[in-house]
Length: 398
Image (cartoon, rainbow, N blue to C red; front, side, top):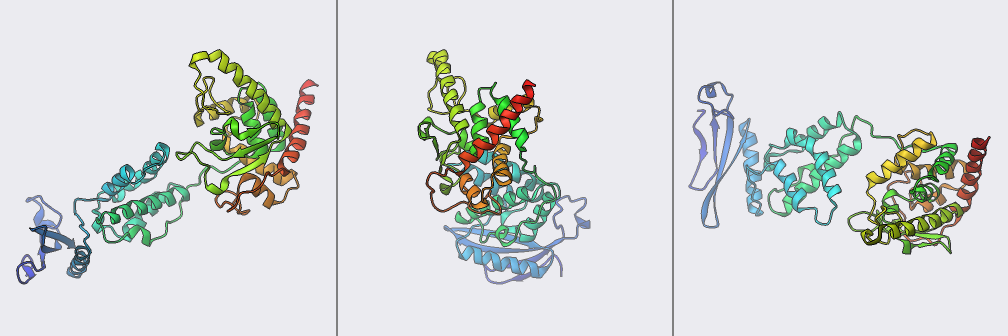
């Protein structure tokens, strides 16, 4: 009858019983709780008797969980009822991301934060694929598909970290596909030819003019431009080697993103002027100058933060009269857009200029070999933007 042990054999065997109290621990109300079936396994581990328990709504569920528990124990896995999903994520974020930048860790922490109130209190050994799917679906209702995908990937990797430490038998997060999100992220945008010319004209009055020129005329990433050293720039040959970024490892986004590009003449001129400006800033700073060999640095030679670039670009855009809601990455998209719409350049060549290989996405899949110096873009950007910049100047003079 309920409340009695339903199966108990020799000492150390499994026990299955019905607990009237269920999850309720209040003596005033436990009589009204529906109750749960519970199972227990007793084993000798390291010379000590250890009793491990499982529970379920029905008896057959407890039997299945006892069987799974035996398999885990036989494989050396040591699941714990006190080790919860929140602990899994915390352990991985603190110990499983060696070498990753603080920004990356912060991003992972932010995208998984919505999961904690949904599944954070579930013991890892009791987590099911259905639990993960339901939680991702919930957060996907108000977030983008990219956010949901990253949250799923982080959870999968965190549980894999627990697997490696014998804390769980299988990775249930890896058994499902991430659902689609319902919210849209910020769409990529690009300046039109007239706006790009106006921006170049306005940039002449700011110390980051060369940054704007370089981003618009060769499509360099912001993370690549901020890490660009002078010894990777050959102004006499008119070339630039994109081999570094501000990422934690110092390399570009992927190994195959390395490329050497010809510089448009306007970019060469802007860099020469910027080099002279930086020389003067070095003299003015005196002993306060910190030499890092960077093309784009602060007035004291220190590396630029992305927030510095965003603020400067906002001012330049305001001066150009094109609105302030433009991000540094939009300059790269502008390069691709102008080359495609006005440059009469094949998509495959644009992909080479930007370091991409997949002409359908141009954002995720990269080429598998290094290319020689690519000169197609230099002439096109000189012709198009120089002509339009002159038109803007003539219009302003009139």
